Length: 338
Image (cartoon, rainbow, N blue to C red; front, side, top):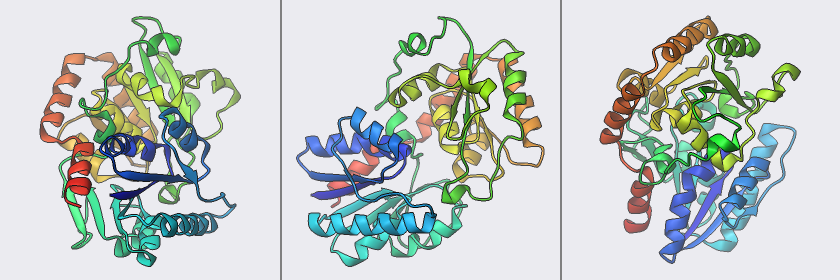
């Protein structure tokens, strides 16, 4: 098969990397395209994945999207793929209407209403976790899994304990990963998370844990030394060994949860998959109310004070027993079904 894969966010690189490696190994012809986002390009290069940048960023989101769609179409027209793959999928869904290839979109974010409204009607197939809240239509295919299990399922991921040395952590040092987002993505517009991150860091450190911050936004000067200093392809090793994740990213909260690390998700919006991970598996705890910083911090501190790794291992095992290896599903659905 001729397969075009689009990666426009770091999480998309993680999502598709095992599929790309397996499809290449099986002799399929793949072309990977991306935008000019630095972290996307760094990850593709670290994973030794050949790629082509198809558009330049613009000051306005709409113009950036139009450029990305045009660049996607131009490459697709020349490459003539059988299928075009993407997460979110707006550019792929639109470009596919002008070539012979079918568009296959993977997505899990219900509240991205504007993006979804201009994507879903044009996509040939849309794969969503079965906890997705909403009926998209006849082109929707549900599967029992999460996007994060494409690269963090035990079949795909083995944690490397050398990450402690790389991060400057002691052998038994307790630590928390704190994630801040920029709120600039289309699906993040209008949302918010913490009120005062310095208060969050202070409260966590008073419990004797080290706080490592990963942030899309600028940090206050007094928190600069808390920034995570490991390569981006090693962040999941760090998440595996953390005592807790707390942050504004639904993706990283879910990544932590499927790794067996308790996660506190702080955002004014919610997701079907983070809701399920709370209600069914008690691996994520969601806080979207007006006093979300206070309530989420209370929960985080209670987890740290009563931390028992056997509890989280047991919950993770139950979740994994219910869910599939998402990459394996992709390989079967795309390569075997054709």
